[in-house]
Image (cartoon, rainbow, N blue to C red; front, side, top):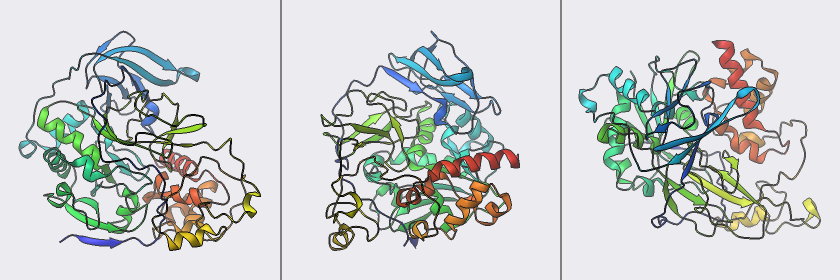
Length: 453
């Protein structure tokens, strides 16, 4: 029987717009795909193709200059029609015109008879390696390392997140094969965090891994929270992480011999008229897939409302994202009396509005929230706001101040090696100081990585 860990701190933001458990009917996918190096934090891309080149699914598009063994491949077969650059010739993205499906053949492999080095080389060649990240620093894992342990988050607790029961249904074999491959990459254990009382067969029947159940509000599904409560990261240690949806890609590589990155993506949000799931490849254009209400200014997000990236209405799916969210911008809305209104229908995490009390009476109440910040930046005040939604034995206010000052000794003492920007998403949501906390943590981790290397 797996261990159960109860998460008490956190916050479930209940929004209107969850995806219904049905898939989009047969759909002619986007003819143009975009692969952006910006989706892969901490790399310096070096192109391997030029405009006009024909590529297959699995063909290398660019590599990391500092670690050229790490390849980033095309998710689709077709022609490279554009290479877009920004200031100082910074590579922004590659556009690929999709054609008939063709795959690079990497050959089927038996995990049980493959060595650790052979498994690593296959993952690197087929472009699966970027899905494996490391703590500390929350960047793509270094293939020369041997991690202390490897952690898989098998559920997502963010607002309107995909239902893993629906995503994994029918793909149990690929999931188990992927887990078997991961067990060969670490000298320790592979821990899989699953939701408490889950009925997902693929998660209840896993082999060769240690399952840990988590019960509680978001961010219980964050792999950083799971690591902290299972086996924290200390200075000098390295652990690797991967999401369950990405484990499927590894399983398909070994079972089929191809780089098949097809994701089951949840189309969500209060302004989406057809909320459902659709199988998409990373970088797919969302034109024609996301159908929304008319007459409003809308915020399109690749990912969830807390950690996702804003995109255009006809933008492209992020390489790591399994969710698309559309909410109102709120620019045309003006609240009478502002913050002094009674607030019967306003969302509140404290006692600012009457709705805080009404939420206690109706736990299933859902809200339509817009993208307005509703206030300007203020001084950081120790008000216990962060601590109430931060389920780690870390002092988030003090860690944030240490990162702003870049006091390395204090950052280490306060747990900087354990965290990633997404772990502070709820702190940013409840913050009355209106700070971009995730970006502050991201910048600090980058500077610390350069300092330590």
